[in-house]
Image (tube, rainbow, N blue to C red):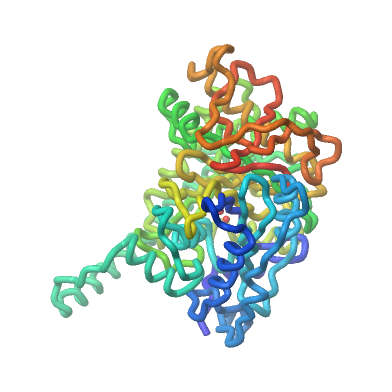
Length: 537
């Protein structure tokens, strides 16, 4: 048995029926030319189910010991249970896909088995199929999930992979490909041991000083004495987002061209992550205004950051967070962006003074009150944050899985009492793939967030002077994307809200001049996907 680290154990302890603690997502693929869909997916399923040796902890399940929680190996893996094959009902739109993903994301994982499931989904239009993954957050974080996705794919459309992404072989091959052979240290053993002892003593002293300094700044910010540094609980307003949640989930997703977001950042002197936060802030502001509940104080977002050391593929959870002031009480989009920049920079400055180990300890100390309030059932009354916005770096090159083109990676994360909405995005190839998860009961019209994200990005483009003239506002069609007739459909699970769906959706690539009209674009058929239907920490 292996002891489960404190952060991972926290996800297990926090889980209940209303708050499943798994992360997941939908990967969208286009079949290779000339193959039979059913036969292709059957071959994939057989390959996935044939796995005998697994990377940790994909063959382990949690058990309670005398001194805490441990991972124990499952000697009787039932691969038919973990790898499943499903078919969508006709006509196989994204509506049906994400309605299925919503239901799958709602159910708890079985703790008597290894905490993961993989669903192959056929029946999509335009020769596409999907893979829905569900993994407990105790077993993996967002960056780790990207390593899993990367290990199953190649950059060569002709390459064929004969091992599953969760297999030990995939792990070893990916580690070799990404990091190569580690070089043996040239320092003699005795000198190395002495150096390690001296460095450890110095590190203990420095760590104590650094942590005390960080805690002082954190406490000062809570009482309003640390400038732009935003911290949990300080002036966090109560809205419909900060409510108790039920177990059912709703999911919406959309791709945005990376060039649009990067273009705004270059002109405004902001990072891509700053612009993403500003997009989300503008969308949340519009959403709350439409519900007549925009609060006086700004919303605060938890922005997870990776604390993994370079080359670390072993950690199940190495994640911290920065509290972002979303400036939702600011009308001007440029001023909103500047305030977000300031709060994010203050958070980065605080963490930059700590080593990854120190930052991990600092996160555990500062998150302890959140754990206590959750266990006492006070999270919705004393919310630490308003929502979560997580930006997970993904592959920058186009990927293929046994010849099938990976079109998009749409993450589905966690919500629980105190914040009923989670916005997670993955940067993949030339686009940003957003996945928004919300409590189905508390936020029933969450599909509007997708439209508000587009409107917010257009608003930022106008401020940056990047808005296109009216004559050029038509979206640019990517090569290989077929146009078909429009059909009006309801978003999955949404009551009375209609969206215009196309059989061959496309990315929101070119901005409009004005942001007042609701966007009708849907995700690309051969490059990325989005739709309404169904947690990066």
